[in-house]
Length: 180
Image 1: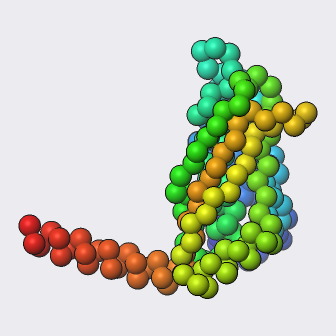
Image 2 (image 1 turned 60 degrees about the vertical axis):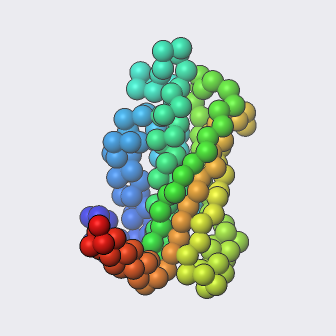
């Protein structure tokens, strides 16, 4: 990513702002009418806004569930990649969505990673070198009415462990192919 090249030359605030602009240009966010309206300098907080518009409106006049999901999909993963750095691998593994009410108003989804969450990740990685966990986020309006809940399943591994895991998997696949 271009920002990786520029990062050493930018202030944290400017880097976060450029990252935000990049996310807002990303087709899955922009196409579904989502908008990242805030990223903290330390990437521990991120806010997405989703409004009812021609891009997000379904046949019954409410916000598509797909627009809700697309605008939340990569956020925790991207935040963790920035926070943890290059020595770790982070993947989105899945998501369970519960729609609570039809979205007809502007909604916000606040992603927050706390020091306690990071401490738990590091503790588990020290024990096992890889860890899967679930974090929840919600789309709410300004009156705190919940429109959708997302249980985001994430995977984090130490990069050295992950490379060995992939190498082992590759050798297994070669062995299976040669035995057939």
